[in-house]
Amino acid sequence: MPELNAFILLAIIVVMVVMDSKLRIMPFLLLILATAAFTLSQGGSLPWTSKEFNTGFGQTIAAAGLAILAGAMVARLAEESGAATYWRKRWKGRGLSLIAAIAGLGGTPMGALAVLTPVLRAAGTDRTRLGLKASYAVNAAQGCLVPSPLPIAGLAILGGDWRWALGLGVLVAVPQMAVGVALARRSPMSEIDAPTVPPSRRAAPGLVLAGALLIALIIAQSLGQMPSEPLGGGNTREGLLGLGRPMILLLTGLIVAAITMGGFRRNGLSETGWAAQGGREALGIFLAVGAAGGFQMMLHNTGMAALISERVAALPPSLGIAIPFLVALASRLVQGSALTATITAAGMMQPLLAPLGLDSEAGRALAVIAIGTGAMAGPHLNDGYFWLSCHHAGLRAAQGLRWVTGGALAQGAMGLAVLAALAALV
Image (cartoon, rainbow, N blue to C red):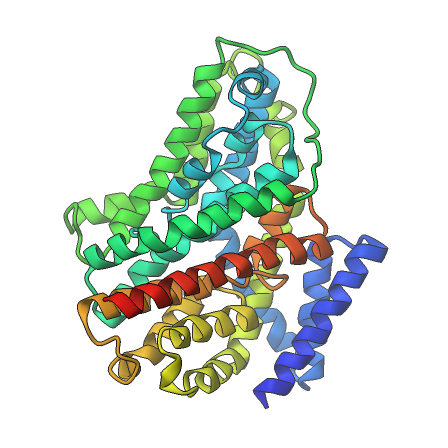
């Protein structure tokens, strides 16, 4: 029974939160314990589950791990060179939500947050509010805006027009970003742990260049993922896809940062230098994100997310645009992956577009945006994106459920309200 399995998962999540709050067990170990506990609760085989876990761990590290290291290493170079100190005193984070939303157009939510690491270090000293503001902006962009991968995947399956999706998506994303800004302002304050380094005007432009380059590379990858191939197919498309791959992010971002911020002159890339310090600081979140990928793989292979999503899809058609939103949300909550939730929901919505009154160009675009919004509305402990958001904001799991998960749900509710209004007009 999928409902019973979902209840067991909920109980395991509660235990994880308690263990994190009371015992301070590292997230990496918590996720391994959760994987084993869920397997045993199903009467499953731990050796078989370990194979699934290893597969998910490896795939997640390949997709996001190097991007996390790239962001952390560039951020440490910026701190030690004085570039981050320079910008913190002058920039003060104005326009951060817009920058984060632009990064959110990139290949994955985790990749977007990862490349924002040096930007966040330069935006100010309030770690929690800046981290949440970035996470909320990425939520809105990933769920609603072309060319981010969730709307692109939905359009490919439902056959919609990306121009309709782009126009309507902006109308939905902007109110969600406004909700995110308001929530971030109400969140608790916490200071970043930054080294006391004098500001360097000479190194400051290097941080801007490295940060902009990382963001540009992941957006180029998203452009390559578009089925319509607006910039060309064949080798051009493969080249775009390759630009945002984690190894390219690591090499390009780190080399540019080292050249422009003096890393080569000060042994910044040595085994005990600045980049190595950044890598060591990121090790905990690196392992947690990988373990969340293993946990996700195990949950996905149980099939309970698809079964629960089918139950939601069978709700009365009178609910209209809420159906695709709820199907995607249910899938995301159960198995953790926003992209998998989008693909699952879009596949289920194909035969339901006409009964839901969405079988038109505008209707298909609204369905795609509803799916993306729902898929981004439920990050929690079974998702590496949740842990990376908590890491940036300096939050424990219980605080993350309130501010990361609760904030995403509030954004999703706003998005659904706007979608319902648009559906009544088009």
